[in-house]
Image (tube, rainbow, N blue to C red; front, top):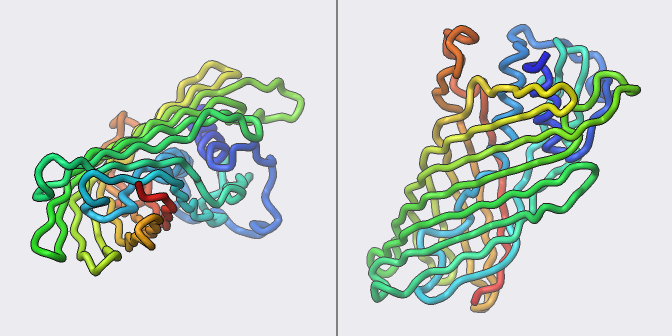
Length: 297
């Protein structure tokens, strides 16, 4: 039972609201895939939530001129899941994963002027405050530390470390029956990783690309029965970004990027549960877009 209910929690985190216990009208007639697996479904949803909130660059390898920074808003798109990914309980129920299309968060970055512009270290922070919304309280804190290196007048190279911590409290694993009492649940997720970056400075516009590895871990405590559920296949694998970072009129920064997590090699926490290794993206993958709007300081 606890493995099945992981699917309920992951979906609820995405929509910040309990879902109806039924097959959604748009999914009527959808049959369960031949390779459907309850554990795979649950672990995919658990990883999907955390992958949707990782702190990708959304800036070039040298995010600012030394001694400058920016504060503003990041908007991450949560791609809608198809009916085959929304099925739970052996295909007898769907979850509504598509109510919340974006994750907005406050974000600030600053480039330090300590090496005369030859190497540009920088720091970034992002935050979603713990505001209760539709029955759940979410707080997400992220950070990055990086180094950018200008090579000549146009080429930029760099590297960065990033992390994200997520906490959600509320009715996440909804009751099986409407008359059952409601208890708060607890979901914790963390992600961290390293990226290598490259870009080309074309005046005030910097096309860039990044590639690296990201690790995801999740924890879920079900309040009504005191069960702690496991993510048996936490994501560890490659991620990549490609985007454009632009400074407009010296005061406004606009950036947009594609972000992808392609699936990784994730050994089961319990070899008795899954001795074989499934295809790379079966337990977790994501393809999405992210946008940054900021005031340059």
